[in-house]
Length: 300
Length: 300
Image 1: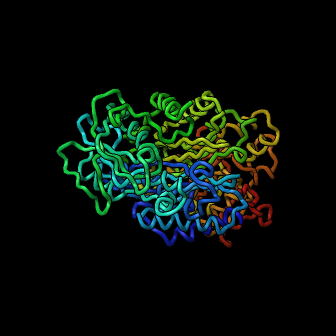
Image 2: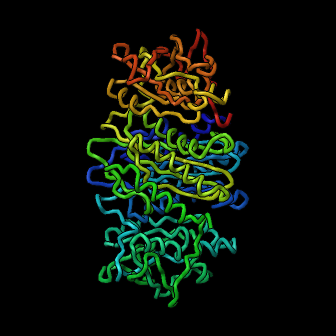
Image 3: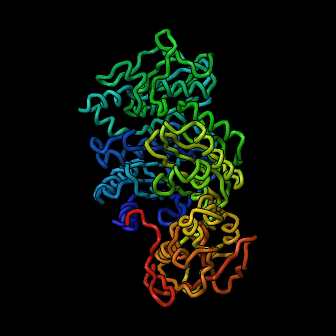
């Protein structure tokens, strides 16, 4: 399996996939070329998915890894209220992995890409001892309308989409719906664009755990938050898992108290869980006590 | 050293650095936000720089790695005739590396970024056994003016900027100017924009070696090439190193025979080395013989 052979196999798959109208030149050149639309901003994110950190080859199939690598970045687009445009996929992998593995990885990634109409426009490929994936996603939003972390105000209500702790619970029990949920997270793109239109004041995706991600949102917004509503627990998940478990990929957002936030966006429940308060930037209270951010820190 | 501590150290450095007028929101949110200019296309590339593949911690300093990681991606922008706008830097590294290493890495990367006025607008950070860097760069070009690989025509002259084989030679002798050149490659951005304005018909950067990269340009252009001019050898480099050595990061480009291509762009020499010919896509002749692409293939 030579590099050009792998690239050709990828290009054959990509040529059958989604092609965004904005992508003028896709794979096969030094750069992808994009023609932006007038009166739109573009949003960009990049996320690692690394063997031994985010997955193990023994428990995660090539398809799981391909899905997760793109889903993590799409979740960041969702948090900005963005609509997907294109992605670049950098993949390092051992030469001992079969061509079949590489094809299964891209098939799953491109299958998720097709569902959200994002085109794969390039990337990089390298041989390495372990599998390392880095996916860059680009989305678009009407000019000036991207949902930021930094614009929540004291008095805003705090909400989450979906249920919390399911991914951490699935990771501990390794079976059933919670494990499947851990393996194949669902980026909340429709919810993200709906929240942007509903006038949410800030938004972040829950990748590292509610306690850590809410502290980040508070820190950027120079405020605190008080969690005073019941957390929407995933089936089987504990409050600890809901507070500190990562990889739920739900959206945490804020809105003015008079904003009309529905109980559901499509079939996805939306739950009020607290209030933004004036406090030292980044402080979060839960059950009357200061909550110590307990989510995932790579360097803790 | 916690993740937030590292991110804060990076953000302090970034806040003193270049801020592109197009970047509305830089580091600190789920995504960076860009406001494109009217009548401009954007070009995007991503490149790995991996321990044990592109460098060794024993021979390459944190500064060398930070420089090289950005230079590789900037070189791809140069090949499109792009002007730099922003980059995203994904860095995985062992927790045992000192905070000083991380700071030195970003200082060198941001020093190169400042020279080419590209802003660091985000990225990702992860702990891992080895150092893996993936840098995404975005550049801008007037609409429809990006230099592609696929638009060379039979009859075009083939040129290179600078000298060839220097990086491979430096890698083998590990001393002197050639070694310094290997460690700190210089992306040819000014040449790239000049070539776009001079009406070059195609362009690619020499990252994997002349024989392989010229074959790629020919393949995408559905043509062949005949190398019939003397190769501009770097001091000490052999013809083999010039043909098959990677990482020179010079620009290989084509132009119609009547195009006015100067002997120098600024202080950078430009040398005619051959002609595009009608042939099976991707075939390259050198010294009257078919040249077998011998550059770097990760999976060979």
